[in-house]
Figure 1 (cartoon, one colour):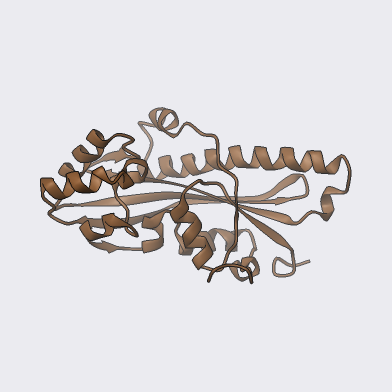
Figure 2 (cartoon, rainbow, N blue to C red; figure 1 turned 90 degrees about the horizontal axis):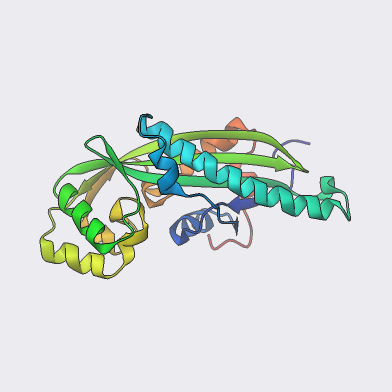
Length: 229
């Protein structure tokens, strides 16, 4: 049976509404299974790593967590039926960080940190790095896995203090990488990007398609007639 003939269920290993929207608008209808990973702690153990490798490892750690959850589900199912009758699973996980002057920053979590981040980058540019991992589960086995990072240049507008404080007060930037969004209120303050916009939102469609091709899974085989696209 070829990749195009198989039956797949897509799993998004992220609680991000933005990532879910990107995938739905691109023709997928994923089930969300949130990874249980302490991103800040794990990042702290990778201070000496290349930034692209660090975000990729974070995406892989999320994949490990989601895969463990999914295999536990399947073991329970296999106790009463044949696991080989289940659809193949395609697991997509990501992690994004902003690289500015050699330093990686993730989610600010607090208003004060978000304000400080914006005051550093306004009027300047940085790289938004997104690590991606794609895993293929068949039955009770992980039969394929591939990962890499994508980089997009983000140019920040010369916003004033009042604009920064008003934006941060909305709460939007507190739980997003680099304290900004491209597809929300933050879009008013982004002067431009160079690269893949979907990667800045949180999941790069060209990168995911490339990783799927490595695993011999055509992205068209994952399109759902029930998606919002």
